[in-house]
Image 1 (cartoon, helix red, strand yellow):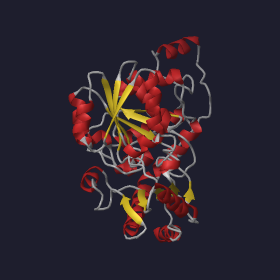
Image 2 (tube, helix red, strand yellow; image 1 turned 30 degrees about the vertical axis):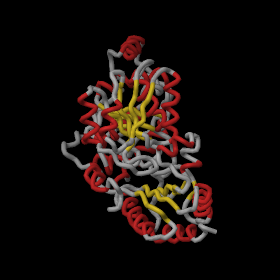
Image 3 (cartoon, one colour; image 1 turned 90 degrees about the vertical axis):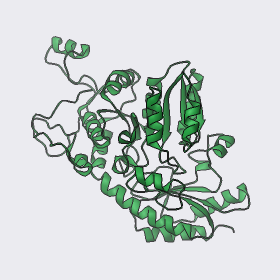
Image 4 (cartoon, one colour; image 1 turned 60 degrees about the vertical axis):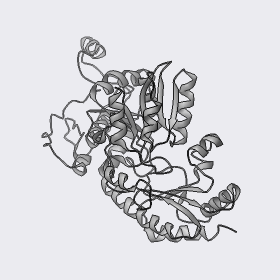
Length: 409
């Protein structure tokens, strides 16, 4: 990756806050001295002569060659996100799933083993099934049971993988304890930090070695583009993951990288306001007779509330809750009735938008996961995931009340 310093910019001082880094880090100005982030929509780059071309292809000279391997706009985004996460280096991909699959495939080969949390995003669960076809086996353990993680590790285990908070149940892992376990076995702990973003949580500071993102979510923040990223130490990112990505080609486009750069600038203010809105809505949901339980780390009733508050700045912007029902069929009917009778929130499976979104995980994000796996992962028919945006929380509460009034009919 090309991470050359900006020759036209004064070096940033050490010790800057995340809010400042989100706006000032990563920028490499051109000879035109633009104030905004430039965008480079080009497939390739020219060389001064054949010798320079040969030197760059051989790796003897730093510089851009082809946008599948690197691009100035993409590099700016990578530098900025690495600064926000506190990592040495970062690479960007076309989507969050591309980031996860590239990480998995760069660290494993046939005969290897992975330990993963039972509570994962549905597509990630399916990815482990695909890896199994290529000889990489997986063991799934309860996210919050650190002893179960220890028991599942084998001599062939090459990494530990989890989300915290988990999607969609908002389970919280003890990152420090699992990170120490991974280090004691000489293997990396990989954490999907999608729900918190570096504005609320920095897994590398807590003991993880690698962080993955669906940049589509909170890093963009407005549901505009797809993107993914992986952050870690320079050796892994440049020597192991970088060559894999150059060859397989899940490339982030310059335009998407530019949008993500802009999203990072408002990340902190968005995350804190959306978290405040989510807490207000979660507290209201706890008092509703048609709601069996609310799963939100910022609530004192959450089983890992204290742990969450020791790792995160806030409870985040995702509120999951379960509606009541006599059986699974009734719970699904009630969940769908609530969703269908809202008028403000968007019925979509994406999260991280300034617009509040709502979905029924059992039939959408986890619909392709087998029924038994859903049960083991706690994805019930009455579960609803609400990704809280920046609208007035009073308006969203009124919208949910409208939906709840239609349950049990």
